[in-house]
Amino acid sequence: MKRLLDVILALMGGLLLAIPILLTAVAVRLTSAGPVLYWSDRVGRNNRLFKMPKFRSMRVNTPAVATHLLENPDQWLTPIGSFLRKSSLDELPQLWCILSGDMSFVGPRPALFNQQDLISLRTSKGVHMLVPGLTGWAQINGRDELPIPHKVALDEEYLKQYSLGLDLKIIALTIVKVLKRESVTH
Image 1: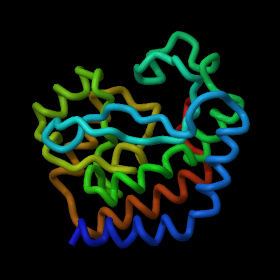
Image 2: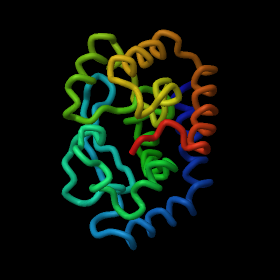
Image 3: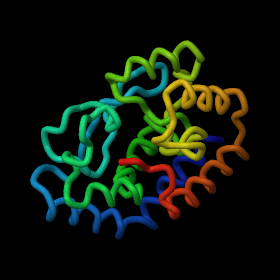
């Protein structure tokens, strides 16, 4: 049921957001050198690596680490990078990952391949068995502001309490948070 809902929502989302996706792609291309999409190596279900696209909000040659680990993240942003991140428009290409089955609408956000602390803690709690999500319980409860142990505790809570109703609640709360631009630090 979850997979069917993911496919239906991703197809509907792609159709409804086709114009914003196209406009965002053009804006990225016109405001900075380099490709429109940034493909990062992410950790998926059972710690399998996959390529996850985002509209590029950082300059080419930015170190491949979590943004909070950069010494001065703002220096790496493209002219529209901050807007893309705060509006979450940079996340729209991930609809492709939902359609391909690498991601779900709801689940723990996929870790970067080199976030060993996050990966090992999720593995020890069994969270690695979940398909990563475009949004999740941790995202609506703090997003960028959460320390890794708290984020994993929320991911584990989602694992234990999963239901279709909880997924729908998380999607609805995500829409509210995105519109309010809450809990985005970079």
